[in-house]
Length: 282
Image 1 (spheres, one colour):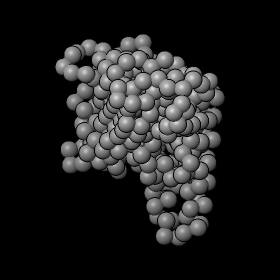
Image 2: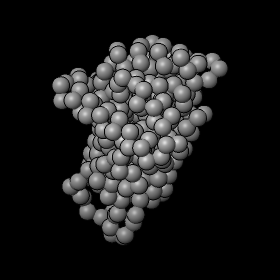
Image 3: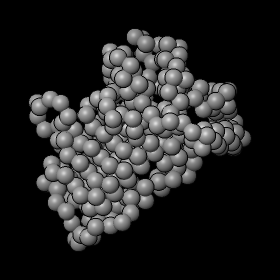
């Protein structure tokens, strides 16, 4: 919902953020050139996805348009729409660059930018959501819903257009992820597959979780209601969370309960998935 917390997504774009985006784009181009050189069968694909484009924004617009187009809103219409969003709100591109770098830094199965840019549905779904959120805030809500629907159909990830997402977020695998209308996910959070950030019934208004900076939500976890998952918290795989989680605290179980001692790190960044007392792995 529009309000103070929605500004998390659209922080002012300073010179450092622009420089970081430019650096990521340069590295992405370099990786695409290298992939093409290693395997000539990829030359057309690398040209189409990365090398033919003048900027990161144009390449990302093109990639999302290809994935999300259908007979109702075709590729060219989506390309113009998405690129228009990036022109109107440059912070969206900075957030996308931060998300891409987060995947490179956190995912042990991946050590580059190119693979998540091309293939990771969590990254694509998050960038599609950012555009849908821009449309939602602009009052173009049926079009925002259309993009939400296409993301759900194509990528099996359902994020309400009003949900607020920070920067440097990793949606690892992402399949089965559901995020409700009034949810807020702050910077540097990591969420694994099959997670629900949902409500607890038919109540209206502010009814979804608030996940604070650097938290880690394990696979299959269900976090329900207008509750806060504190800074640096860990939620164990398969847990059902219906009460607030204190900062730097680990919770597991059904219903989830705190275990072990408070830690001092941001597990959403470190991807430390081990819990102690008793031993438990997300």
